[in-house]
Image 1 (cartoon, rainbow, N blue to C red):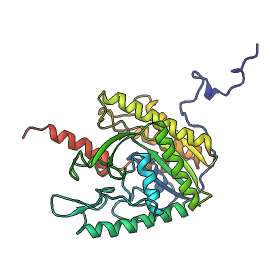
Image 2: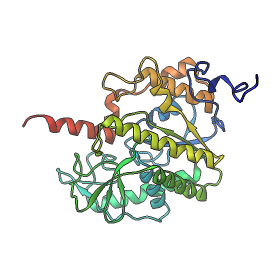
Image 3: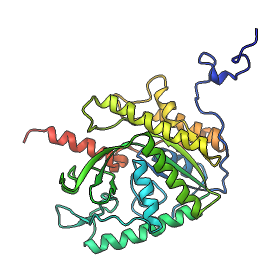
Image 4: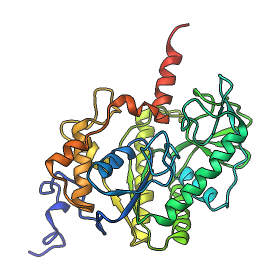
Length: 333
């Protein structure tokens, strides 16, 4: 007897579906494409794979860290992504001034750990930010494919103009002031609107740009919602997954890569015993899947060189600093 499920492919049937939840992308990467990336800490895994396998990874702002295409550090929220694009075209100038550090140096509130040792003066921060935004604009103009890994829905913003920070002021950098800063947890509509607005800015600069969205599988280090952090993680990742899927449905030049699903579905677990660190095996599975479905399959030697760098190198991630900061606060004395 015929029915709607008679002719669906195996990947659509739970007991027949392959282990890799990703299907072939709408477009393929070539070795001549200029590819740029941004996002949360997990975005660095894709960067490693691109760099180590001969793809043309675009860097418009070389600096102390080569984890991303420009020196924006971690971009966890869709609001951060939108605002950096707005700032790059002169449509948004945040009011927040440079933050003083304990050693008399100065930090960029929107990239607080991008400059080892900080800057000499507030003006040096602003001058460097101007150069940075020019590099971001050039990146959007010149990139063929942009890969963005969304990480969090929870963010801290300025009450004066809504500027989003990568960290909560006062958690190791800056000074918390409830009169100046507020917590926000961005819902589906806000995240969808942010991504849509970002894409329209990017396409105004580069109509041929193609975009791959992904969602970081790394759980929240902490939540400001009055509930278990696991519930907040589930809510946050679900919201982001819906928002990026909406972009994929609206635009042919947008696709989704299932890094989140690959790690959460990994057997054995895709996480180390701490419940937050993605295992090297899971990282390799993610990287191999990305190139299998969007680029050229990696040979064994290339996959070996694409292994993640030592964990200590990734302690620069803002989310890792928050986790470590909170643990330090628990220690007596």
